[in-house]
Length: 402
Image (cartoon, one colour):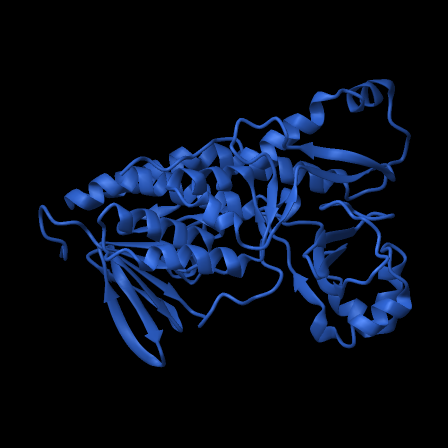
């Protein structure tokens, strides 16, 4: 049974008000399509989410006409990313030659980005954001998804729409209830995130630098350092059994901070947040009346910080491909499958690169690099190549003009 009427715009229900969900909701609403976005939380204030705004995303924001306003928010810029190769510092990615307006990564708390984007979307008459709205089930009729059953402000409701889009992350409720086939690739490591307050005399630290030894990441957040410590996957429980003092001693061996300072900052395990890294992707992103994008369709490793920006590019592609059939009321499964075909290569290529990098760091090197590897390392183009892959991705998406 169809709930849409001919010659009228079809409605869209987006589950998840993350970067992909809000960007897609904004783009569809500005194209005249009625959009309802469900967000299970009451705000966007959560630590240690993807806080990198890549040049590709900044280009999208510029095309939408509010880049200057966006960059007025507090942020840090990184024109290059640094890391280690065999214990030696190296430039891993250089964004200074990208064909974009902003040739850098902007480090900004994700809640600022989401608050900014939701404020823009809420000015559009076709956009509605429902918070404290937990999606629980999909509504289906005659083999087609026709809406979502959700608990909103403590009350169970049924929201009917012509299209449901899952943007609810790697633990997607939409993906789970849709029963879409998924391929999992695993990951050798997890990351533990911590906050360390800044002090006078702290070293100058370039964003993305791994630190004196491997497995330590440090990002400048203005008044504090966001620090990540990489551990073998599944080993967090064993670390907790050994005790917080032993763990902080390990971190101090890789960080530019003394163990005494770490003990002053990290008082209990509640201040250590586990990021379980997973790499997976759906074999099919869509079924009648339903589409998944972003982490709900393909979970990424934090390598390169590309997950948020890949999800936003999914959202732009989906808006470009689906706006016309949604406005005409003619949306079909074929239109939804076009989104997956459009984004499949970028997803596969990005995940393949992340898997290759993960495997390369899984085992210690048994022999020194050969002549060819040393020669390749000295080539000046590598940082610019990786700058393009990280900064823009494998396939560029830009919003179409209204």
